[in-house]
Length: 462
Image (cartoon, rainbow, N blue to C red; front, side):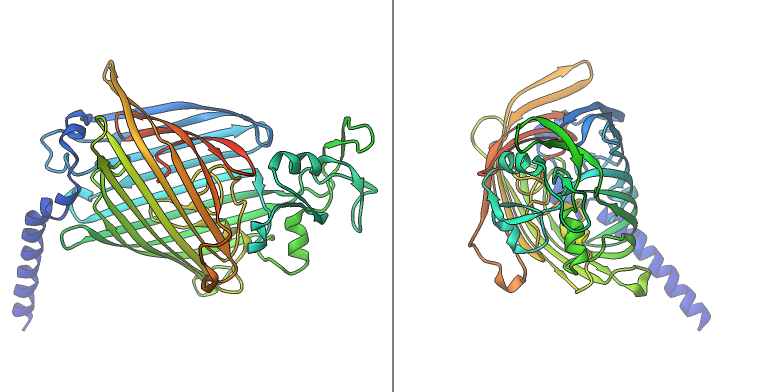
């Protein structure tokens, strides 16, 4: 019997090896790059890096660096036409005069050594005193309100921002005279480690993914902190202690949880369908996912919740110009569990990277990040990506394009109430610079009824 079992194990191992040799190309044929993109793909190992400079009235002046190291392999590698890279290491670091700072490290290894496995490792350490909070229910779909006066509303963020700074009489637990200048802000300190692996099924269009994430989070609000203010009588600039923040008010009234922070332990699972031809900047194909995050005291978490997110993307090259792509995305998500902390409402998890929801560069450009929050949400994005010119400087390739876009979405307190009423929309235009194809610099200007905002980031919005 031992000999039979040993023989079967040997035959099984040989079968696996042979199957892998046969599969080495068959399971990724659908992801072959276009002939035009393949001809321009850079060989070997190279680094792309840009200085990160910014100036913002909230976060202050910031500086840092954004770098990527790519291992593409040689053109005679069988995987060369099918993978965006053999391996990529991302390292981002930035510091702001407001004391915001971040360090992000990412490692991505698709089709490890020609197998069906893909591995990702993410690490993040950050402190950000400029996070925004406007509430945690579908009432955020209404106009902006002062934390201290829900009866006064503002149609634009500019009007709202000025009104927050006007000095008012203090209430219970506040100084005699205070301002609400910082009352929609809070500070978050986060340390996070995430490990993920996915496996290609059948012909490689379907993948299953599993992962584990552990975080430690802490939060602070700015009660009593001296802040810029406006004298209500003279209209002159002055300073005053900040009043009680909206986040603190909601926490003390029992409307939200999680302000004390703590440990979050999460098991991640996803089912993925992917036929994109080039992940960083597709010209054709589809991407669909059902993603879930489960957190419980049974796996070492201080919070119990379950987050479900479903999204679909489509890319289609159209016969206008040399490279014009119509890109679209639709996403819907819900958070289950009465003990879900407020910070889990602020993003939808995806194997492709978390998405701020709802508002900001990744979901609803033209509105501030996390402007609309509730237990359930949906959003959609449409872009027309038009390549205008290409050039080569030394051994570096650059391509320039524009991307007009339209975004829409809404939130609800129950998933059963999700519909197409009370939808928030924004629109605008963007500039795209593709550096050696894999690094895409995005500059977007979004316009909404409430605000006009400029965004800069690395990578397409979706």
